Length: 507
Image (tube, rainbow, N blue to C red; front, side, top):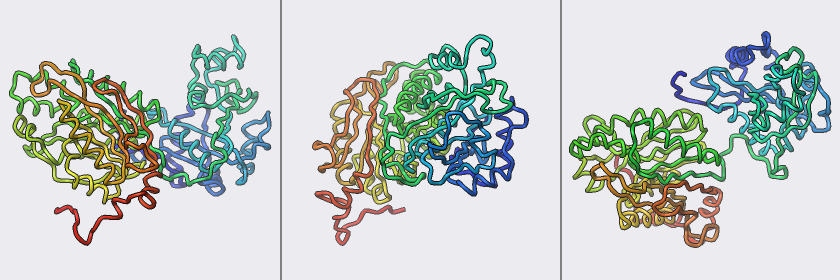
């Protein structure tokens, strides 16, 4: 697969038509010349533009989800594709309907396996909730049924797919996305021989049906954080690190986390091969792994649909050794952040240099800040990020003793209070033999909050078991921060005496 630089999920435009057609032909190669005509797409966009979605990879349309609005009373128990689409004129579309009916979903074969179809389904669900629709319905093909049609009935086939005794790429995907089977329909799509012209009417119910509608592209109010308390262990090679990292990314992604946070210098076990060198040379050898790690984590961010904060790792730039990390976004882009404040130990043993850029990052969940370990002990750093709109501060750290951890923890709690934000910290645990200057670690991952009535009394949203490898999954409600800024018992951001003092960047 080609290197992916950017993934975008957005509404379809008529200018996308030629690429849409090409991808559709490839996606339905088993069906003869299966694609929408341009005038049909134009019609869809004229009557229901917000219901038509595309996935764009590096400027190329590689998938789409097309929909109509229908009233549940107009969806008969027995209908064909031609009937539900008004013979492809979409005259059945009802703007006042309460059901989102899916008339097409496809992904170009070259881009399957990246969970792009899941993104389209998730966006449909989000649209359904925000528009206060009752459900999503569609009739899905069962393209592998023709292999077993002489042996089992469609009903038996569906049950075997459900129990994972057989595999059907369309049906299995829909079942995994929480759709349930309503009924089996015969003669649904003329010419679909691989499905024997059967289809399965499926439905996903919106449990928030009475909720107030919002706009489809609005930012999430509740953001789920996945913190990884990483066990330091000997690793055979880079692939072993990737295997362990993917295990955790898969785990927190399985709980639909929006962010995965790794600790500072969690890649240190790879330095064991250079233990015969002095410490400064060994960590410079470790820096050779940094760019391959960034590239692999960007792939993970795409395929697991999660924003990954890669902790930190050494980076050589113009002869200087920096401590950096990467924000690998699920849209395929990435940005680097650097540790600004370097500890005396990092200078003495490794000859490390601090970075000189402090900035908040835009994400699909709002503005975030990242402060690597020692950085969080300097209140000016986080206050500058708060001035830039930060709502979530992530702190990857590495501490060897409990007193070092206490400094990070107490300062992180202070940053949450004074900047009226959430602060998430994650570090490494365990012992690491055969790596100089990295022998012992102490950590306890946690998420801290401001201290007011809407938050926990002790300002601790959640915390992990100390010194144990585990994940911590935590929800952060950003709407509570908005309320705090305006109506909190104290308002530490609003009540600053800017007439007496200010904090600002000097370059």
